[in-house]
Length: 613
Image (cartoon, rainbow, N blue to C red):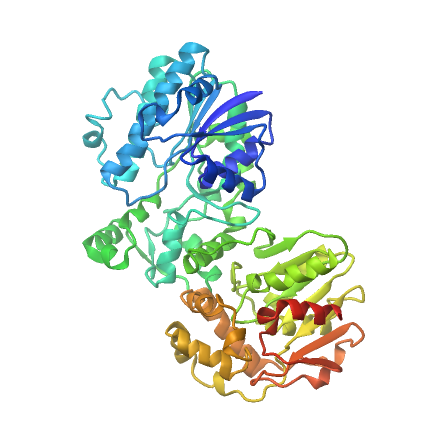
């Protein structure tokens, strides 16, 4: 068994790394500021192992890392040090960055020295960004990084400068004392390939924020410039493989893909723009000019730092060593481009709802680039499709009610362009959503109970008419909007509708919800709902997708229900809806005394109606 001392273990990279390390025969000591908070983080993640994971309270910025005598002894018995600590904050001051990165490097190197003198340090692993100017060829710079470093490195940004000086300092110490050092240079790190979940919004999130606010109308740098990316699970798996190596010297692993497999910035922005349901920029502007423009005062106005452009580069990197460790095709197999749309949508969602608390009853996954939330169970799954002015999370209470009453699995996707799912352009808008039905029906091989609310019901009607759902499946439609009473709310031009959404106040939104019968009264509106909808209108992805689907329902949609089988169809209708009439053409209907959004306002009763209780 290897014993590992890890800094940064509660961070975005560190948590993923701990999960991977626990799959091997490792005992891990994590440096944390608060043991109770760290335990809570890992319990929420679901992989807290008391036999292999130990939390040591301390602080990178303090001498001896602020450890107690007992904890010092535990650290001195470890075999490997992994240093991945320090928050990503490109706006940190020189004093803040020096305290965390340079002083942190000094304090942890002192432990490395003592371990090596006592028992021999098997390996020191340091994770530092791919733009570090130091490598195996130029790391023997004989300067005092504390006294001369800030003048030696002509890098204005304190965050970058001190991180790179810490890299040099750790290399100097390893060289002087003779212990093995592996320096891992990842590019910009994004979320897991299985979920796209990117909690660290300070990296690629800066670019997403610029797009959200209409501040990325051009391509920075143009042809040949790139923003290399890596997922945190690919990075974690790589570090675990390096842990297993028997090192005898200093090695640098740069995890940047080959140029021919790494899209340039224009292609990257094209994918991101499509995911955000926006027009892609077409004009290239030299990077130097863009930085000068940002430094002229635009950064202060937009509150988006110009140093965020420093991660865009036209440099060429050598990645021969990582290929020797992981295989020649590793960069291709782990390419972020395979799931970049989901990453972009996740970052957009986090910027909309910075204080959102995820419901851990649901496991989050990707099917293609569509986000799906799942509760495991026995039997055929309930598959719930949400409507407009909502997302999958709004159906979580209904899904939990159905699961608790039956024990069956629950699957809830975020429909494309809404929630955490990216938009994707398609010749036929509805095909984008029917493809979700096809993908999920392929997973539910023994059939499912499909439940569609509002626009989600339209998707299921169309899927049924197209014979995508066979007799193994049953369908419940909640408030299918197929029989309009009037079209007044859709007659204004798109531009006016867009600004009406963006400028909507809480009071005007509340009036709209009540006047159109989405809720039967103010008391039935969930407490979180109005604030959530207003926040969603800060996203071009949500606004543009909502308007497109609204137009589809109001102008283009002429459903042919003659092919829809009635034998497995159940319709439930809230009679307080003032915009749509009950769809009598679909057969028998169960009428309930609620508004259009009754699955959100009355999930318990909705579950009973669905189950026929």
